[in-house]
Length: 319
Image (cartoon, rainbow, N blue to C red; front, side, top):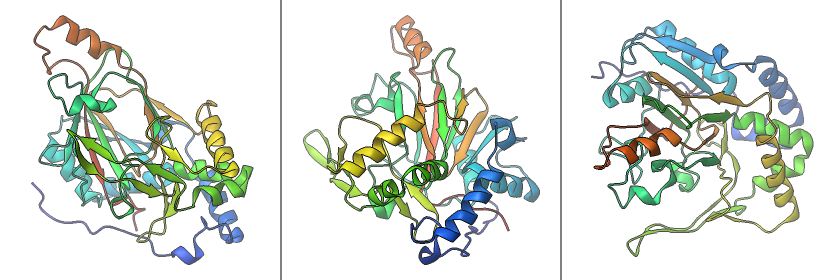
């Protein structure tokens, strides 16, 4: 139960006009880049916190979580007491994430239960609800700009014995690597018509229209960088332009290079991540498939279960 409201902390030191993410602001970018790289963690343990319960932590621990999140736009946590979906929501709320995205496959509480769903015709059409690998992406890349996903939380409620490994990559680091390599890649990916997602239809009905937008943009509220991306080869239409193709090839090269900036993570029960919609992927889950084969009734109580919540808000550095 929420007992109080913590006001979302948003830094207004950078407006869109003097944002370091604008190519013309070279001096601002140089200063921001220096600080970003100097403070970036070298391993997951540097941005991992231990919590007694998700709905029971002190002001100092809240500050620690928000300050750590500013380093790599993500924080990993270990919790002693297994949370409910309600306490997961409360945890995010106390960190300033108030506006949940009620996507198609989420429950009435707007939190999705990510597990294999052979019983559901709707869920079976979406890869997260299968045992298949998920390619690199940011969440909600198919959303309209008015409903940008700025943060997500993923909590592991049940562990898989094999597969389902994740990798995470900070979009701000991706921006640095692309801009340092060729600033024209940033210009190309900031075009408002660079990435197009075809409409989504279910049972012959259009449930989402075509979405057209940039890969990189600057959030109007926080002046922070937002990234919209998917490495999928199907259902993504990219602007036909040499500099766009160069930028996309560079992103693929960086993500597949074994970069020191990439965090590899195998979720286990009681662990989770809360992040500003960083790039992530998932390897194939073998254990879930095997368990379901052993259970003729397709018992959904077997196999990996991840609770996922998406937010229109983002984590902000504490003050």
